[in-house]
Length: 109
Ligand code: SF4
Ligand code: SF4
Image (tube, rainbow, N blue to C red; front, side, top):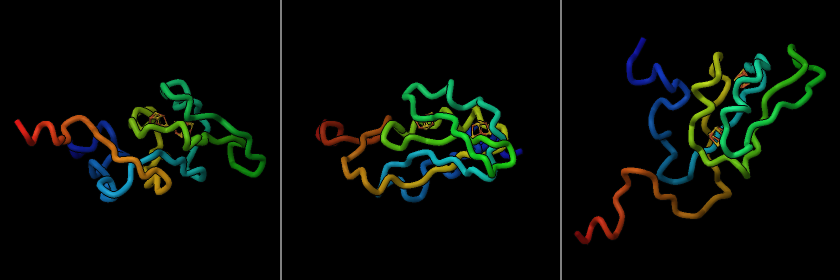
């Protein structure tokens, strides 16, 4: 198993290729979700809920409430079947500062 992506398989590559342009938010691939209920409790931001899906194999699936998702990535580790992926939040145009990013203040020092 590759060391660089064994802990956060959904985060490969880090950050996602679109990360400079748009902030990443989580999305559930509903066809892959086995409705194990592991991801909602790990989300600090109430961005994950379980919803009924009568036609789904497991009759339920996790769903991301995109407005609440901060892109923290915690849910990726919880999912045993890699049913969570990154997608670009194209509606969020606010500049994002993440740990390790250089800032104007850093550049002036
Ligand atoms: S990326 Fe973070 S905020 Fe978004 S759904 Fe997953 S745990 Fe919640
Ligand atoms: S952890 Fe994965 S399989 Fe389990 S409910 Fe969440 S998305 Fe579905």
